[in-house]
Amino acid sequence: MNAEDIVKRFALLEGERKNVESIWEDIERFIMPFRGEFFRDMKSEGEVNWRKRQVYDSTAIQAAQNLAASIQSNIMNPATKWFNFEFREKELQDDDAAQEWLDTCTEIVYYDLVESDLNKEAAEAITDMVGFGTAIIIEEERDEGLDFTSVPIREAYFEENSDGGIYNLYRILRWTAIQIQEFFVKGDYKATNLPEAVQAKLATTEAGTTKFDIVFCIFRRDEIEKDPSAKVLGPKARPYGSMYVMRTGAEMLGAEGGYYEQPAFAPRWRTTAGSKWGHSPGTVALADIMTLNEITETTLEAAAKAVDPPLVTTQRGVMSDVDLSRGGLTVLRNIDDLAPFNTNARIDWGHLEIDRLQQSINRSFFVDQLELKESPAMTATEVQVRYELMQRLLGPTLGHLVDDFLNPAVSRAFNIAYRAGRLPEPPKIVLEVGSKLDIEYTGPMARSHKQEQVISTTNWMSQLAEYAQVDPTVLDVVDTDKMPRELGHMGGVPAVMMRSKDEVADIRTKREEQMKAAQEAENAKNQGQGQKAAAEGEAAMQEAGNGNQ
Image (cartoon, rainbow, N blue to C red; front, side, top):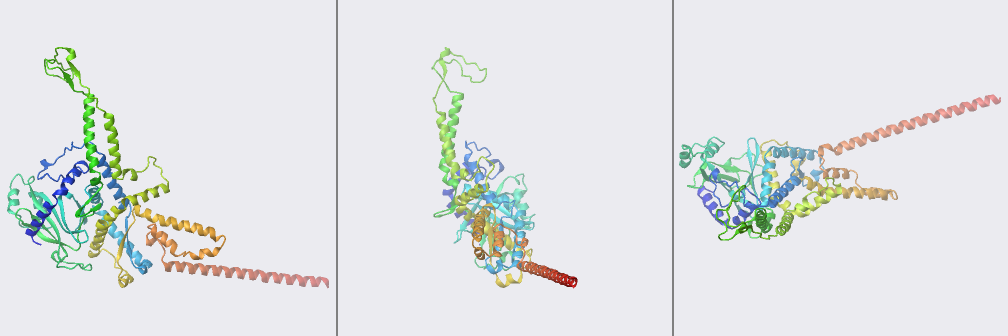
């Protein structure tokens, strides 16, 4: 793909999206303020609209933020390790050396993600999913580690592949001449030439204010096959390329870049029939949100009239301008010619309708279902039921988030660490079997799902213990070696904390030898005591015989 193709394709995608942008404009105004107005061409700081007074009720804004925070904290809580790698083959799952290697890889990749800005950018992306229905996030590899960028949906366009993911991504950047110079000349690109328009602007006082449109594109190189085992490839030899292009004139900035995997992801709240853009609770609740805003505005106006009512007078009753300021003086012909006008507005009806709409909006964003009860103390059963409810409500969305974002992002982080040589060499058995890895999520919601299996297992063991009092043979059904390991696995216990099978066998062998030695000592002791008793008895008999003589 060349620079001219990028500019032309971007223009087509920009025109294609105008119908959905009209909905996004309302979502941005009432649910996602300051995320970017779609029909304002903001090319300078002075064009940013900081006064959002069109919004008279913040219920939807707060509900969207709470829902996004709840999703992030229950899937990828930064306070705990929220994923593990797993082997697909049972043979490797039972091998202690393979499991310890996998745990080490998990630790390295996890801390790579923790030390990046993933948590901050994921919060922005999940908020976009809750509001606009679609989020765009890019995972880059930098010298200092991983770098994530949640792209405002206003700036992002993409062509869809057969799986519904991103085939080519286009992002419109509005940078000043100073930003362009800093990024391309002083940054990693080390460019020697900039477009004439940029160079001319650098020589003026507008170098840091006037902005240029730049199209950043990540595109698939169809002629290059993916090779997961490749460790070092030049930028142009990688399956995915990237270019920065001036929108006016289609001049390329810097050199062409490359990626080993698609670094851009597009998770959606729900897919929309016939469209690549998703829809969200914000889309569904938009009618109620706009109605609530209008009713709140009307109610506030009615309340203002009740506090400071309009005045009525006769045509000739007022001899001067009406002065409503404190201490003001108004000249009348007759004191009865000026009186307040009572509109008889039912403000209480407005408040009732506002309450109804606020409850409807909160239900759309699952506020009532996901919030904790008023009492801070919750039993373990109540917590478990709360997580089960979250799974039912958010299950489809969590599936989109995992498949469209977390799985490819974690896999790419693993591949980056592997190519950098920071992962330990796998054991021989791993190389022989050649297993593929799965990602298991261990956040609070995932642990809650596994907790159901733990509870079922412990309940089963309690029942068997009762039956064993009648028939001890029922315990023969239980594999007492596998059960504690499986319970530890479901509880997220690291493999390094469990003894290997060989270690367990050694402990049992030593225990048997110690028990055997103790038994032999006991037998010898008992035998010695028996011999001593026999000797004493024989001596007593001899003494008794001598006495009789």
